[in-house]
Image (spheres, one colour):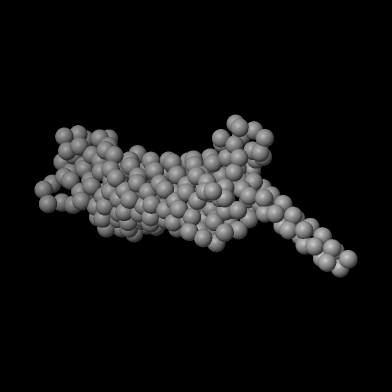
Length: 235
């Protein structure tokens, strides 16, 4: 009789454990990611005549995932900016090489909506908005300025270190492993960077600070700290 009771209890425990293990499938995620990315940079507001060019940047980031749809991201990048035409306006041109460091918080639509019974809502759960604070280390090579006498330098700083505000919208595609955990993420984004200074191009002129934008493509890989979410991540 005792053996029968023990066997029955053991069977119940095993069945219950199997049930909850199955129920958790698709609820787990890694708290930490590392990622790399490439960007195309475009200065949309500077003190040179419009003749803008796309230039590249390379990015490296570390992510702490408060949840699968709320992310804290520390990012570093190296890139360049270029604009101007010596034959137009004052003949101003510049080529900028910069290091940028930023801390952003990212909120994805999946945190705010129920996507469990809607293919359309599920398609939009990776849409995100992100913002934070950044720091730009800037080195500029300037071209000529026809409106000034020979040897006279235009106002502005060729080497500057200044904060900037990144505002980013994008879409994150999650790829799931055999346990339905998001293990690889593909990130497509557009970022608007408002520089808190007028020296991005090395020229200090006008009343407005400089602005540049970026189109980005990145890949992130989960590296550990697996924990559970309150609802199923995998659809």
